[in-house]
Image 1: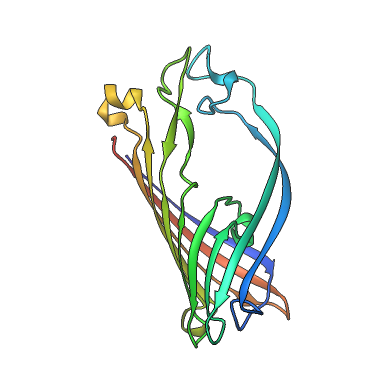
Image 2: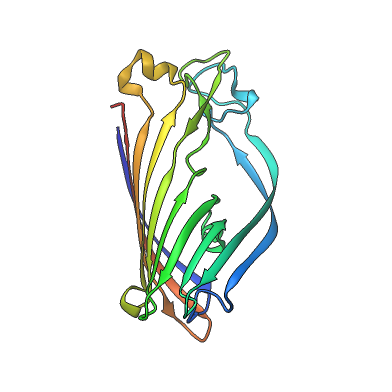
Length: 221
């Protein structure tokens, strides 16, 4: 099954340009604590309230709750011009756009100011799903795992134009329904592409139009 969608967004953000990846060489990091609230109403949600359904076409009451998340990152910057950096953790930029994932990577900044950023996200595709989402009662959960590999090109040729690309794999450990009917297999490969341009409004605020494209190809039909 192929799933594709394109999203165009326009954001007003606050930011500043930096001539180097960090102010000083060596290790640096930050830790923060974030809170949130969620409400999900879907029979695909693996909460115990959805273990037994009256009908596959109906959902139980919405599952709600609060979140308390310790977040942070660790970096090691080096090079004559502080133009190389290893990092691990969660990025502020991704959290601001609704993506919460652990990331490990390497950045290299060219003389033009362009930054090449390669990373792996080992947890973003991991989670828990129903082994047979079409079964209405006594549903059992199974794990889904995968990795995402990401390449970002920021400030291309010294401009404010950036590109963000990723390739991700997802494997469902015990796909009961997919074993019965191969057309319903949920193992999938996903391609993500995003491009944006930072337009300075004043000294600090900037407009950031963004175009995103996602294509997911599952093993089933």
